[in-house]
Image (cartoon, rainbow, N blue to C red; front, side, top):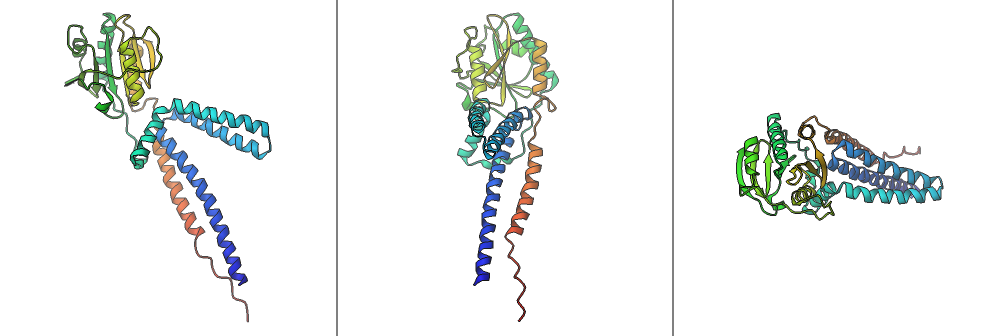
Length: 306
């Protein structure tokens, strides 16, 4: 009876330890999923900062530093709220996949940025430069990672499916054409559509910004895998919208540099998801082996000599 009671206590201790290990593993898995969703090295520094604050708050409570722990707790909450605004596109993608039951896509291989041929970027920048000099308004949407769903547009526009050329871009945005008021959708080296009507941003913008700028902000707020190039009809200034934020004014050389960096495979957007997946596979295999050893039936104690 005593032996059975001791064995039961041993198994209970193993179960408690396994639950604690499972708790830690679930937290690590959640952190891993967040890092995979973000997948951009620059943004990971913010995540590391938040983790550091959380660890500092827990450590201060462990040491009995009540006031410091209180301050760090409030700082962690404020940082989490700020990151929710900064990473709203990533959180929206995570919530959409959760709602649609497509969690497996979080662990799928990352999409590489669509490389834009240098000649295509040259054609776009040359056209934008001349449109800016002539003060001809223009709005161009450039897809980055994947195709844009037409449901994100207010009106899909007129399909063209033509090669990108400076002359065609300039011709479409002339005020005498029927398609000059809308946006132009560019995918790779093709102009897919023109006259696309975009949703307007609801953010409070400067009075100097017209409908084109607010439309560029609106579509990039809703779709995180595109950028918009805007040419102001009033001033001829060039702007670039990404993530609902306008970078303005830009010179043509600056625009060329930004687009080359954006659409280059070796640009500043360095993916870290492959390394995280390799680490995740190693950790999962080691955790599985550990659990198998943990729940292996205990060897019977040596029999007492009669």
